[in-house]
Image 1 (cartoon, rainbow, N blue to C red):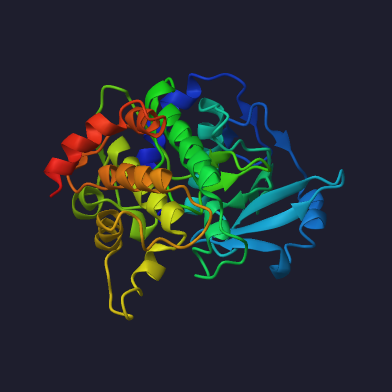
Image 2: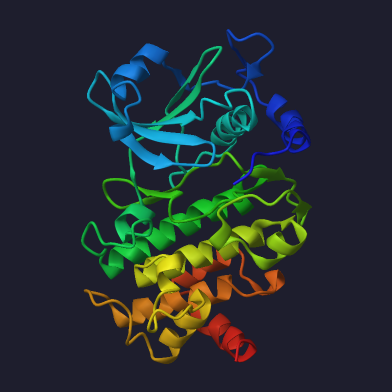
Length: 339
């Protein structure tokens, strides 16, 4: 991952200033868009996380850690804390961006910031506590720490994430490109409804713009070819990342784990899954899956991960396909192209 550049953040500020409820912080020189977000004291969060105990760490990221916390009222939260050695670096930009995006984008399939804490030395973001798709699929440890998700649930997760991205790309006042879609940034509520989270690297674009050029950010194994080679970022970059996440959701394995299949010889994820499709899903991990749903999700995933960004569907098309409104027609065309 990488922090947004100063120019990238400043380009987004005129849009932010168009929105009211400017919150004046107690830190000199900072005027941030906090609006309706609840402000927590540092002491509250220290108590909630047992002093930011290593035992409470949920995730270790490039810019800091996420801690599980229990507030005084008993509610569980996730607390994002930047690394101590860089309290005034790129984390400030990520902090500002995430609050801004949470104000601009309000949808049931997007993770909402619950609150914040800011002091001269700390900038913390507080979210509702939720499991990630990665944790349920064992994508980090390559082990299934919990039972495999049933296929109707997996399709529900795929649909929820798709709807969240469709809103960011096509239904918001401004086009928002997430830039870091992966199974660790798709979270699940108690009903396994998916929400898209971690908007700290998101980019604002006008709906008439097709792409921007930006330093390479995000999770390496999910990045699209055009982003790696040219730094070209668009909503189709998110579509590619969504496709890779969908493949993980279908197979129950991470990209790295899939490279170990076939007698420990390196196998690229897409080639392996294409082989599964040719075999009509006969080698997919056993479970209570529905064959037609497995094939449907693989087909959608392969469309999303096409090398040519222009040939990838828009997220609204993905939602339609998952709702079985346009799958057969589009897959017939895509299948001929991908022989």
